[in-house]
Length: 225
Image (cartoon, rainbow, N blue to C red; front, side, top):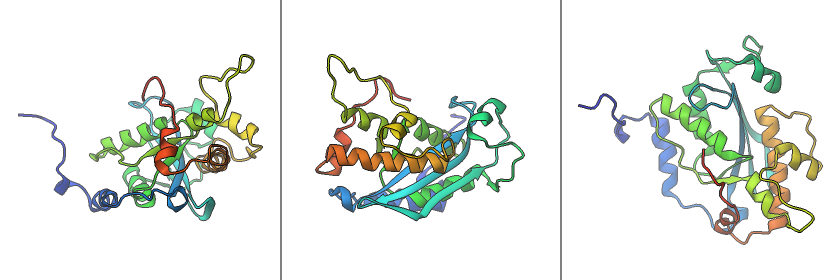
């Protein structure tokens, strides 16, 4: 007898079923008809097993319009804490941010993203962290298609004998390239705003004909997370 069994669809909470049912509908072919969710996570570190998500920030984009009033931001209470990472994201263990539980944050996030394409910078890390949180709470992985601004940005660059592409480009690299303010850098919502502006600049350069064309313009990394 197996000690651990995957939950059946009927055992999953209503909010997961509502999220899953969104994928019955196909995404529009036209990029401008799609609603993109640009998001970022701040975490206690980079270990998928040991570390936890401290905050999630997201903003929506449709027809090249950033839906500022529909931005998303949650802070998650965690028992695990790394004081070294706090120097980067600034989230203190006993800070004044109103925190909710991990499962509450996941419910709100899934309700927010629906079946939309998720966009992030080095997005596989954020997806993996969310998937680990879902797993801890007995839920399946995210179903959304993803776009990585780091990979897409590399497609905008020409490789010459003088100028060689770097293996990776940081969000700071993109902010400097596109003259984006880094005022709220290293906050989940702040990084999401930097990413969405960079994403718009990348779209302007790539000029993809369809959503499928845009997804194909990503060169997958040599290794997955």
